[in-house]
Length: 94
Image (cartoon, rainbow, N blue to C red):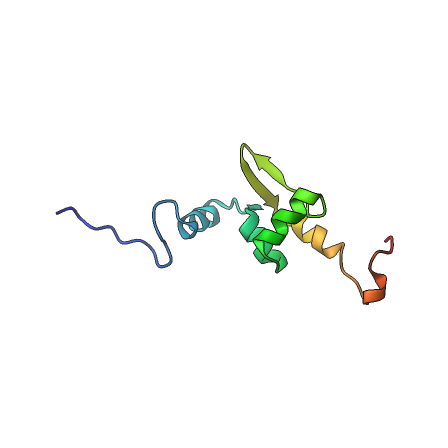
């Protein structure tokens, strides 16, 4: 029988999100996130974010080969630019 390797809590297999996040934190390369991470940051579903990307009404994104990524500082700026004081402000030019 082979030796068992223990994975960190929350890790579900090779290349799991927990392991990737841990590696990103260790290297300091956390400026980009995937669709799920961006949706979580914005408080919306990944499906909604994908639809907004497809119809051109979502935040700016970049593609690395087939991978869609969001630049976190740009994502925060995009969200901040959509702040309103009342519902009557929707649709008005800033």
